[in-house]
Each structure stands twice: as structure tokens, then as C-alpha cells.
Image (cartoon, rainbow, N blue to C red; front, side, top):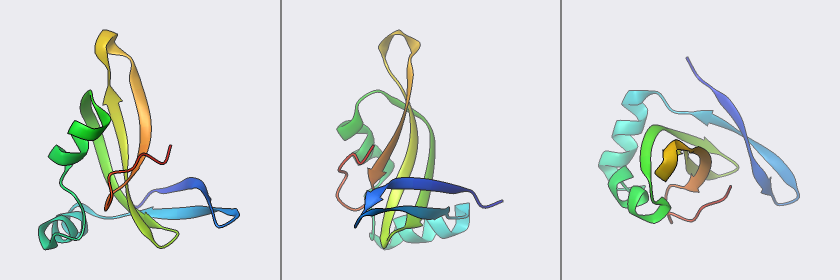
Length: 87
């Protein structure tokens, strides 16, 4: 099942994203086109409890649920290539 999410405003408008299937995500990560989740986890801090690789607005992003100390869960959007947090 594909999911759609709205990415932050890119070039003046919100971009719709399509999440990749597990097989598509594995192929993209395996090709080296994006950073592995282990690298992204060190950037965002906390424990990644859910992750989806999505494409939209011309970029690949990770949609993450990250558990922080104290049990709080933050939902983040991270550029999968650069590791920069977008939201």
C-alpha cells in the first residue's frame, strides 16, 4: 500500500510524496543513492522506531518516527541524500 504525505514547501508549494515499497527502498539504499538509516539515526538522535523512504518534489526523503529520551516520539522528514532535517 502506497502512502502519500505532504513535504514542506519546496519552490513555493507543498510537494506530494509517494512512499516506496520495501523492495524499491531496498534497491535505492543498496545502490548508494541515499544514506543508510544508521547514518541518519546518528544525525537525528534518538531511536528510529518507524521509517519510510519516499519520493516527491524531486527528492528522496525519509519519513521517520524517532523516540526521544522520556518516551516522546517526534515525526521527522529528512532528506535521504544529505541527511538534512526538513521538518
